[in-house]
Length: 239
Ligand code: OAD
Image 1 (cartoon, rainbow, N blue to C red):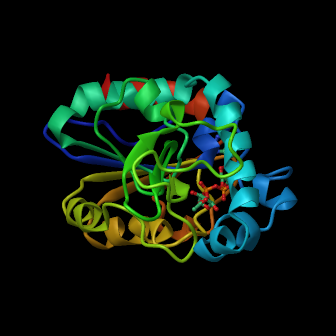
Image 2 (cartoon, protein in one colour):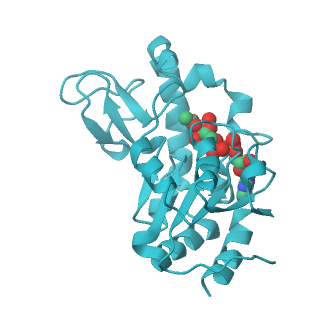
């Protein structure tokens, strides 16, 4: 395995991850063969309109995913990223589209979960937030303990604004390296971060099972599983 990069602690690293990094933890991605969107239509379960139309169905979808992710553990790819946070410290920035919480479980502290978290939900009426583990998931549509409004998973659905965009944009303009792992590069605005970082002069690196849609903006691409490749590459980058 070859890489032309050697990281220095005083440089800045921005990492964007997607569902592919959690594939080796046993969680299904969205768009691969047997991906989640083969069995479900986005408009049925991942839009605010779907929740308004049929909150019970949306809750069934996310309860099932929650029960799967409760069994999932971080894999070697997540742990390699934790090593990068230890190396870069204040110069490390991790943004994930994943809602599974596995970066936090691997010990990463600076994680921006731009599409929300499937460990949390909030009241559609009074906005009180809850952890999934503190609510009664046996209810078809879990209710708020404060106001009896409907709770909804804290997921950023299609048509909603991802979290932390201002912060992310500021960091993108100052990063030396942009590393993108396990994402198909089709969902915006996340798919645009690679281009933005590159246009500000960052070196861009990609790790993915298949070439992503925004491949043309990647300077160094490593094709394969992130759980295999990341630990080896991280050793080369920070040795
Ligand atoms: P996708 O399912 O679109 O893409 C996953 C990518 O990971 C694909 O390009 C795979 O080739 C790659 N992949 C699979 N296994 C891998 C492995 N072991 N190592 C490395 N790469 C691997 O998932 P995302 O790009 O994360 O949004 O999807 C982006 C957003 O679209 C998600 O956050 C979700 C989805 O609809 C919401 O639910 C709001």
